[in-house]
Length: 264
Ligand code: MLT
Image (tube, rainbow, N blue to C red):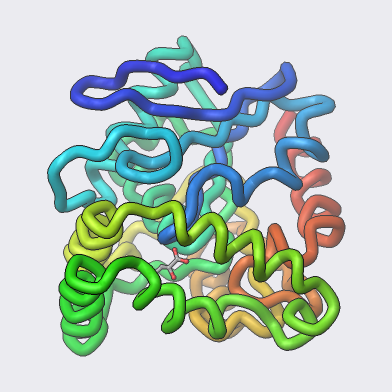
């Protein structure tokens, strides 16, 4: 796995294939390992990059909060370090918040957008309060608090029944998260601005993907986001929950592949 120094931290990332660059940004509290099925399937005609966002996976932990703006600047710094002027940017859930922050702050670096199981709205006051409580508990009791709370809501019943290995993999990924990084990302997500004003001003091709049974960012949320982005398309991944790329990788990749091909 390559690493690169980006300002105040060392970033671990995957870098596979050759061709136009696609950067996948992981959700919370995951790491780049969640993109394994896309690294394999999409790197035949694209250069697929998947960084560990600061604090997660093999990337260094720094002091928080990890705001979406800070993460977006880290991604722009990664593109600079790799001499890539442009990339298609895809993000799942928190990764989608970062992708939208990247559009706001570094619009000229974004060649296309893949918004996966995510939303443009900011947190409600209640959601912010919940994040504060979860961050406190994660610090006191460890990340198992978060796993117990979040994992049952992440995947669909079908996935739980038919692909238990996906649940085990997610658990393993989540268990590797450091409580301080969890708290820093929760604080950063609570601070994120509403991105709905940005959607009508997206000028690049966009694909919105959502699991049919996504309980955290349901299909109607994805539809509203899609309706607000000029020319965007939405694809519902049948049988998947919130982690659609891992739960139904074949359907997910089959939706992404033509989008990337058209962009070439
Ligand atoms: C994620 O999957 O990244 C999280 O559910 C995002 C969030 O907590 O808003």
